[in-house]
Image (cartoon, rainbow, N blue to C red):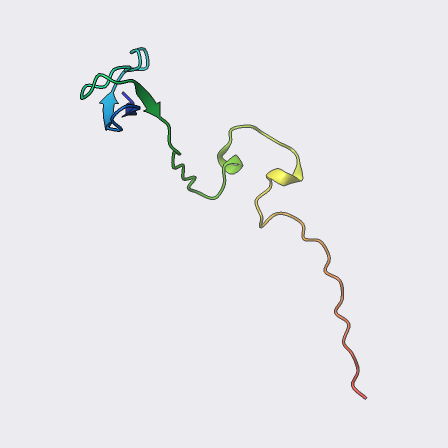
Amino acid sequence: MPTYQYRCHNCGSELEAVQKFSDPALTVCPECAGELRKVFSAVGVVFKGSGFYRTDSRKSTSSSSLPATEKKSSPQPAKVEAKSA
């Protein structure tokens, strides 16, 4: 079950509540009987591994699905050296 964070508009107190998705949101502050609002914050997501699409179950025939070691490298331009006089 997810944990929700609430903040009171009147007294500024914060509380956390473990609720089911189907439970109604809390609306009354237990300290001052003021109005509660849910607090939304950023969620940290970490993708681990060599890549998201490499482990994908779809089959693809494009060259973008090949591992980096199997891709054809593009030719590099020749370096031009300046002659010293």
